[in-house]
Image (cartoon, rainbow, N blue to C red):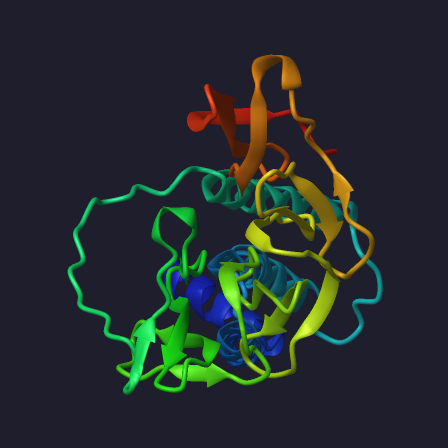
Length: 302
């Protein structure tokens, strides 16, 4: 009878402190908040770790904290925290921080990549042909996120334009205002496309907008867009590698021809993954002939 009385007393105490009401209310509020965060994550393309961090805070930290708060404050008359209560809250706080730290450490680990092969045929739009520059250039560029393809196509009247095709679509869209476009390349966020036309280096937003001129680039040859909003490009040989802000400005040379080695031109810059260094090709003139020597690594831009 003593044991039964103790359980009954405990249940009565739980009821008097409204522990179940507190937890049910907290559970409904938490579920609503997590659902809202999930919707916002999909709309704004947040990282999955944002949802995981909020989940840890509300579940691992919030549920114990809510239980303790309900137990100590669910009954009228309790107006201040006791020392034991403060210790428990601090313990929950530091445990929650530990879980968040663990999540961030896990997010920095390189994901496992499984090799796979994709085979596909990509045809030019109707009544057009792909622009072909031989060994001197490239008219096709795949976006960094692997979802879109930018290319130059020539119509039956000989007009040359920039086109874009989503790889999950069978149709391509012409980007208006890109007459005479050459040598397309992408911004790191896969939103803008840089290209050369009318003696200028230009960019265009793939979703909306008209082409914007970045700088003069007579006979633009090749370009690459760094994550610090820096663009490197070269012009028709003989040339060096130039640097300009993607927002626009006056280009400046970042390489110099070594005439003692017979260097004739620098071309085809390409940013390395660190975003600070880049590769470029060096052509050397020997015996009246241009010999492509290979790639060189330039020092940091920052």
